Length: 240
Image (cartoon, rainbow, N blue to C red; front, top):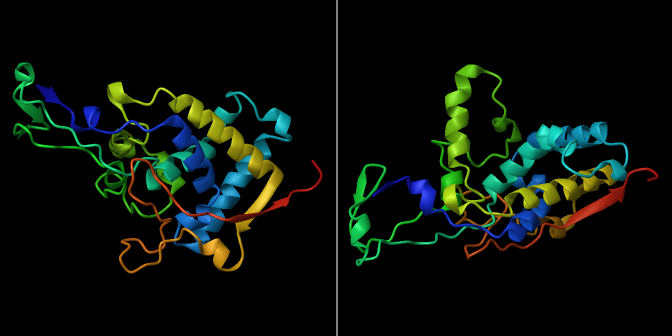
């Protein structure tokens, strides 16, 4: 039996987890990037897109206008790439009694019987082969104006597996994206935000010596991602 390694071994996350994680992590782009200049540009571009597309919260509904906010979707995807809802590996193995599918061949590699295999989404999303400069928060990596970069775009698209892919894709993916877009768009329309002052604003930022990326928003390995923070301070924008 020949299969793609990404087709059947990537875990399927719960859509509610995807929605919740995306909303809070995207609203903490300061924790997602090590470069203050990048943080400022990202926040400005996203807020500008939302505030130039919508004039009131009533306008933020459905998918027609939201789908035109390409930078919003790019920020959501980049957030999910850096901080996937599921960080652990769900191991699988071919049953010894499953004679009808033997041998198991994945990407031209024959997998011995009773060998556990799996794809870790966090590791996949931080692989430089698919995502250059993988620890950086770069929503613009989703845009490829040059036709010569189409191969790179397809490679990145095939490796983006936050909601799983193939027959195991999360059935709630579309709903999670819509709800996340609605919440983020309305939040940025009504509020400016920044990290909470003092030590409270540093909760969740990985700064221990055993962390590979010391400024990355810290995740903890579990069946689903868990985290502390982020803590943000919001200010109303004008009279709405």
